[in-house]
Image: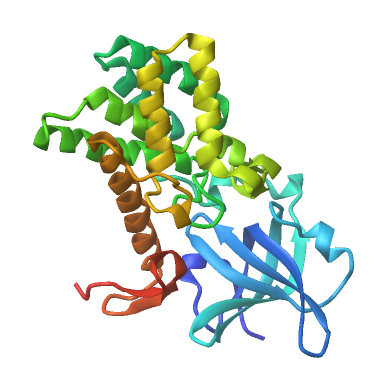
Length: 319
């Protein structure tokens, strides 16, 4: 009998019989063309994701192994049409006796949440515009508990624990460099837009207790994070008596940061700081997705097609 080994997802190879702990990022019941039911999963650990299938059908599987559940699994790694797949033989929910550490098997941002949060707060504290400083700090401190662990997405860029902090802090670092190149920019307005541009995601998504998205909220499905963000800013403006002109500009930055109407922005950016915010956002998202796509790819090889990158195959340089 082949040896059962423990491996991280990034180390999986076809033919491996692997046992380990995983987070169920996605779970759904499907049917074959012969009407046989099975469970289709996306398993995650802190190194990546893999498609997993449980062919032994039981009606209770739908609730026992729902999205957001932590499990212990054993199965065989297959090569299915050029992609790795995990065929499950044994599957159970974790329990207290397993004594597992959450960060060992769910994807997390590469920096500690406190480190990233403190960097953002330090940026706010160094703002020269006292009105913008007070307003942004009010929103960040009001939502600190969620911000510390919230991901930036369910499946796409920065969809990891504390991914929202990672996304914002990365964008801030680039924004600060750009203000040295373009000295005419209103620094505090740009930094405030970066910090608040995705704040509506706190209302758009529902998370599990370990910090990954289980589903989109009803408001998120009906309105999306752009509208939710504007609602949050509008409410905070009333609560703090924030300057209406500056509040309007920040709302426009949120409204326009996706740029195209088909991506949720009914207005294009109408001033320089809003324009830069869009490109900071899309650059950070795309670089993240490109790097993630090639994590498990050998040098000199291409990734699978990436939906968020126009279905491109991403190449990993051979050096």
